[in-house]
Length: 310
Ligand code: F2R
Ligand code: MG
Ligand code: MG
Figure 1: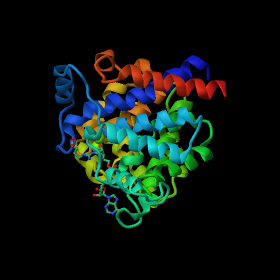
Figure 2: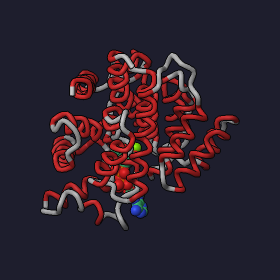
Figure 3: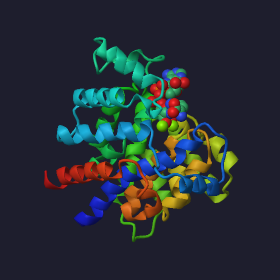
Figure 4: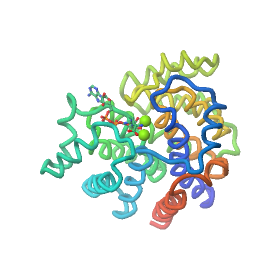
């Protein structure tokens, strides 16, 4: 793939996360909404404000850049510092609890195991994974290793880790594909099913083909889920991308309109879609209003430079 196309995909994955998150944020926790309502709310806002999804993704990118690849301790303290500066981003209950435990002396690489029973399977480590998805897009084994290790910081349950690796791999596959060529949904899904070990993810991914054939949002929410757990939102984001692989706007509006964890499903759908189509696919009416857009672009460019000059 030529370098400018790859660069556009790096930019897309990070800005796409921010736009999907910001479009979904007003609808998080709501029942289903019409795509037109999502458009109308965004239209009225002067700034599209992002939440913890993008804030934590920024931490992932900052740390990868600073340490020229994955360093768990550095990423942990980057998350903590960012959280302490902006605790108002709507974080899930788990990560702040873990950050406080680490500040109080807990080891950064085992603190998350104490949370819930055997760690969290929330979608918090999948929602922030875009920088890892693009940076390791050419190495599925290393991608899995880094996705798991980055998840371990806050989401130590195997299903939390698998959700992060699955979302990262969806972004990596999308990054590898040329958007000018015909898109093969069956092949994309087969690769994901083959990659993820957990039965709950395999089962939900296997339902997507049928759900795409007969679109029905209520069935999608029931069968794939639209909740805060990784297994109730990562497959749904993949489904949403596959509803419109050729359109960022339609895929993300579809994702947010499912309701439930709308910012996170929007963020994850946006990351996959724009890792495939590139940053040009994200409508300017949304890009221009996105909070900290220039910083997200700067991070994506630095990550791409690190990748292509290493
Ligand atoms: N926090 C929110 N939204 C709440 C409202 C925000 C409001 N708009 C505001 O501005 O304040 N959204 C964000 O949180 C989600 C990511 O959460 P994360 O980081 O995964 O949190 P956690 O606590 O690790 O897991 C979430 C819940 O999942 C259940 N759970 C997880 N593991 C479990 C286990 N092993 N056993 C049982 N339950 C488990 C718990 O209920 C956790 O609280 C995103 O939506 C982000 O946008
Ligand atoms: Mg959020
Ligand atoms: Mg959310």
